[in-house]
Length: 226
Image (cartoon, rainbow, N blue to C red; front, side):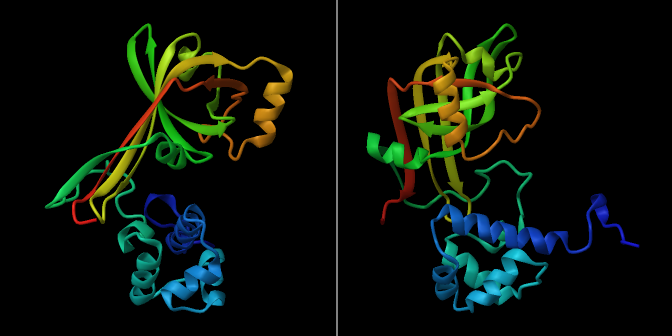
């Protein structure tokens, strides 16, 4: 009989989640296990065990992994998941600079989670969506009766960002452009075939919305010493 944990979790779930966070951050950075293990000063076999099994890494191992991945031990342990970003201490000598179009596209990358701002009968709304970047357009799946579907037929704003609490740094990219529903069968098949993820919100969400950028801007905040 399995013993219950607070919140209904299972024994070892927290340790498995640590490994998953390590794997997710490593993948996001485009690092192999071998390269990550070399940076962290550990055996690749141990890193594989940590990512795939229920492991209990030492504090020293977590510190080394956090340094190798450019994150914090708290982040790898899942601390602050329910806390809005931006509560950390501001940089003493901060520098805010504009990102060029190519830098903005690099940060949009191929897919992720962003926010689309739309007008609804109840007023303005900003909602998160899983998005893809395909042929320079932002595309996301939704349901016809959902809030994101209100983007269709109007000019909308779409935003993605990243906040590094440990380093008090971050960036944001804003895309503005007209949104339309994709109905052409060949275009829909192309989107489905090239999609990296399914909507996190679940349910049947087969309506594809495409935002063709007419303006793309971004900003980054870093230390002035960089």
